[in-house]
Length: 329
Ligand SMILES: [Zn+2]
Image (cartoon, rainbow, N blue to C red; front, top):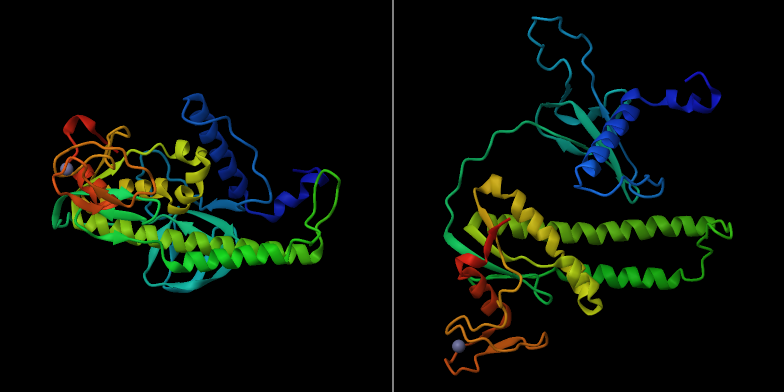
């Protein structure tokens, strides 16, 4: 620490560095267990974030019971928050209750800074589900179709925001955007453009997240057992034609949300084998026929008179999937 090149480290709380090393330790142990790839170096450009935590001021001696809340920061009602080792910060949104937490992570998205911390909360008592089992077909055209007939769409605002994004990129096509290899520096106006671009990207991501969150909560409140297709998402993204649509509709994100909401709402998420012909099978007579992606209506060729929406047919099939095709999420 005495060396002048490390003098800047004194400007920040020590827990910033400590938590970074703890994360590194986690990353290495995950790699050793074969759960993750070898840790990558963090770049300065993308996803700025750091973690600070409160260390207990007085350590209780042996035999003494540890004092509660000595290693916690009390957060008061209002817009001010004091992070350990940092100055008092003003929040955009008001906190409505007194709470306490030990660890705080500060992160940046576009040009906005966020602080996140964990609270202890009481578990929500199990709620009554109106529907026993529901099939959920995640689609390319509609975001999701439920076997009870409800449909969820991506809001039109995403499309509008995307058009705006395209226009912004086109208008700024001649800016000196910078390139590291030939050492061309980005112009000042390009830097402004980068901020605008990041904000718009974040805006689109927020709309998407808001929609999927509302949808998964809605479904988790409604049904006790949720059956979705066990999609090979990375395989679908590799398919160039499907890629845009798939990453657009965030299949993986929906599944993740449904899975972690199990504990909150007392639901059970079941994955249906990816080779189960949910969209090719007639939900009435179980006749299997080829269905191209462009066919939006399922008309049973066995002649049982089943004519219905392609996604609806698939969702009913998922609901009634045989037991040997099901695994828990
Ligand atoms: Zn049929």
